[in-house]
Amino acid sequence: MRIFDLFLRRAGVDRAHALNGRPPVSRLTFECPRDVLGTVRKQVYTDFHAAGLAVSALQVDARADQELASACITVHCPPDRRSALMAQARRLGSHPGVRGVRFGRTRRAPNA
Image 1 (cartoon, rainbow, N blue to C red):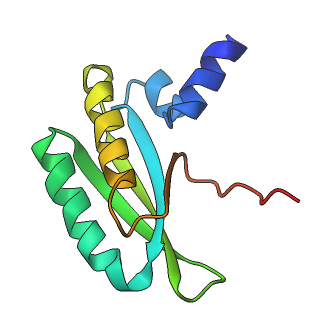
Image 2 (image 1 turned 120 degrees about the horizontal axis):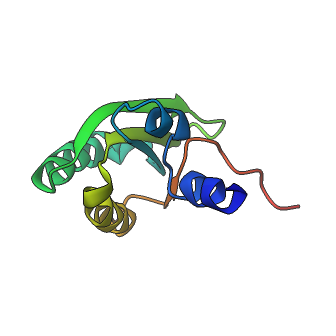
């Protein structure tokens, strides 16, 4: 069971939602310069909707670096749409302004 839990966490699936019969929720976090955030945001909503994925929230966090923004996208993603979610994550990561995409909402500690 621990391996399955690890798989769910790596895929950005909220296990509490999956166990309680609520729609499965995944979270993606991306970083980009603040000046392109509006453009990326519009593209996220357009692309995810076209792929049949419902974006329920997009939260922008302030970063220590005033030029960068970090945004967390919450997506309702049934298991049969997982491949569409992965494709959208790759597409988002290839956007010229996006510096990185990862599943989950926690920020990784920098390596020393």
